[in-house]
Image (cartoon, rainbow, N blue to C red; front, side, top):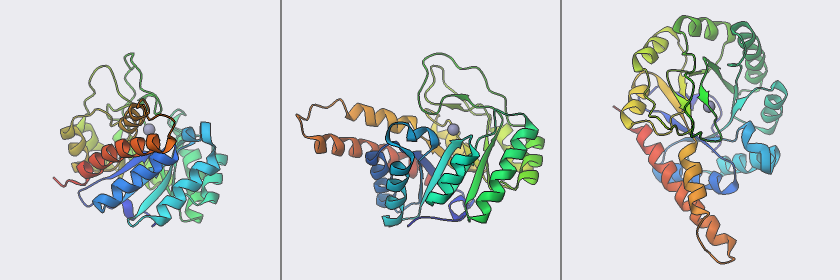
Length: 274
Ligand SMILES: [Zn+2]
């Protein structure tokens, strides 16, 4: 069922995996993995996923799959800078949206986030925002070294949440989008300070390749939504190199099987209570 409201963000010691989809195959794989484990999941049909296939077709597939699922499935707009696009996705039936004003200065980020929160809450849609600067790109891993981003400041996070009324906050604690050439470690002490200063659930982006202990340590300290993307992309692209003659269905099935396995691994790991 389509999970509306913030129930998926309940701080119960576990976190929900929010997995990016670009295709019908990945949508299918993510929902199948959640159903097999009997766990909720969030389908991230984000602004940057619309490029090749179009916003409405991708969103329609995600929403239809969520409604047909036997477990709660949220449909989330990841990383969006455009208020117009957010409004369009709310119209389509998204259960949550992310306004990313992290590239703006603090006051501009507060203003745009506040505007989105007002609009989204009217429609019963919850909102994630980001404070601090995350290095890397959410759609492609880089083989060059990343610049360090600016960490989220705990006091500023408290003020941001208070002034915007946002429902969830993505934090920068050393995390980097995509796979990275040098290993990334999270600053869990810094995360604990942010969590102590802010009353809202925290979101971790850029979790690819992190050691399980860092991921579970983050969940223990208040992260309730962990974004997953690069691992599924790798599984998807790996499956597409198989020789299946001219039977597209075989290729689709191989891709779905490969992505379901990866999605299930992540959902299960994040469900592990410490
Ligand atoms: Zn992100």
